Length: 241
Image 1 (cartoon, rainbow, N blue to C red):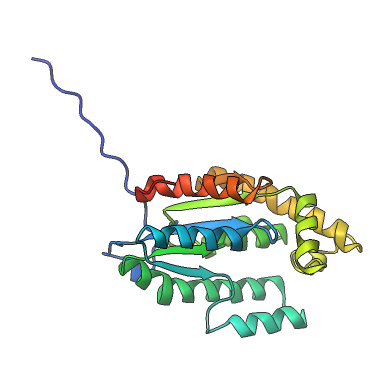
Image 2 (image 1 turned 90 degrees about the vertical axis):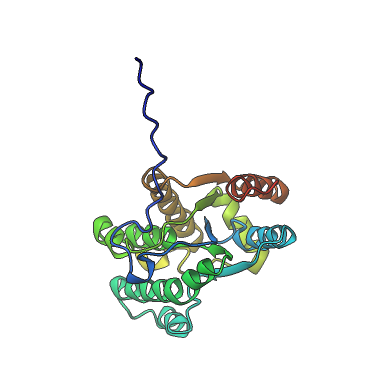
């Protein structure tokens, strides 16, 4: 008598990339965590706003998170950036504290309550920046390993030269830190921006293999990119784009 082949159950998504925080143990979430990554000028804010409107029109409650939004450290990080006297490692620890404070006190409670959390950047930008600035990759990944694994991550990929144009259109200038001027790549901010953003994009390409997120071509129009994002998230939530 032939035996039926055993069917394997799909592997459950791990809670964290490493040892999970105590707040994550023995719990399940009614909500979902979606991350939108990308450089300044990639359209993150625009697309998160449009996604919020789309989700809310489909009856989903939405919560937001992003970098430097923790009431515990947001002002301190901004002051540290302005003074430019702290080491890269110290700045890394500032950002990590800001992230985990939001994770414990804002993201996890929102997910338990059934919200869709839209993250304007997550640990991937933090790791890419640190590694591009010379941090040890294993040390950096270990630092952020307790982070909650998102349900989906989309990286908005834009050509660095296009990013320059978009940033000039938005604010008529380039950001010191987004240009990597602290690294001495070039005395010219324009050249330094192109070099630094190129380093970040290479790191995101490496991380895509490790973390399995979606790379979205954001050189296209806003409607085209938004459609791609809604299609990806809609499959997970059971919502038509």
